[in-house]
Image 1 (spheres, rainbow, N blue to C red):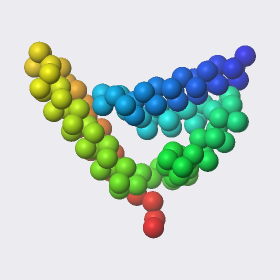
Image 2: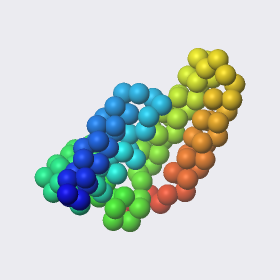
Image 3: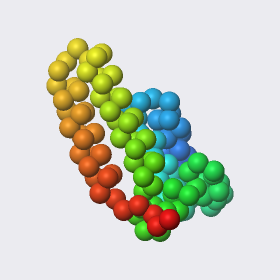
Image 4: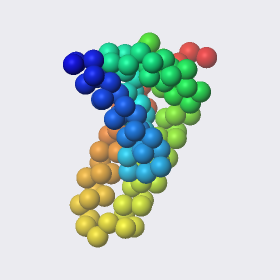
Length: 120
């Protein structure tokens, strides 16, 4: 039963990660990382597919091996957070929504830039 719950979490996280690739307010990478972790406990086939994936595989392996994030990924994540923040400033009728979200995104960006980068 536990294996099935892990597999369900893996697939749910993967689907949310894919949705996040198209919605600027949802992150992609954290969901993909959760999917890879859960798949290691519930679906070896999905885990193998994620690790072999041309877009996600290397990032998952580098994160799990030594907690590194590539500089290009950091720039992309920061740009997407900035674009999301600007979108919220423009479209949110409530001032506090972009204020809270912007604060969370800024803290996330600082945390992300403090992560080491993989050796070349």
